[in-house]
Image (cartoon, rainbow, N blue to C red; front, side, top):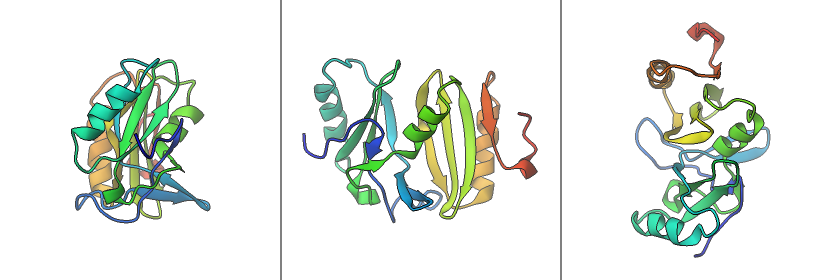
Length: 165
């Protein structure tokens, strides 16, 4: 399969998505990070290629992926149509690695491109919670929805949102 990348390496983006999630990358410092990947647990870490190939073939726009080689292996699917590029680091994988002492993390970060939401549950990046919102209100609503789930080990949100840490 073409465009394979390894651990934390994947796409980036400049445009695309839905009205609420119009970008596929965020920039922190001078580094672009891919966001908006579709994350899935890896069923066969010894031979991930057939599983990932099947996932990519099931979505005509999917054409890139990254692997998270952790105790709970995952892959993230990226799309060139969202502006993702091979070799760019995944923001979600970077946060999961940086906060690896916690198994369940809900976080939202203000970034220059909007508001980036990430959720990690039982060491897995949640499939639909690697999202860049253009609207603070939409990001806040999504974050509050996550708070309905119990047992977050670590929460990160803007102080003015008054989230119990």
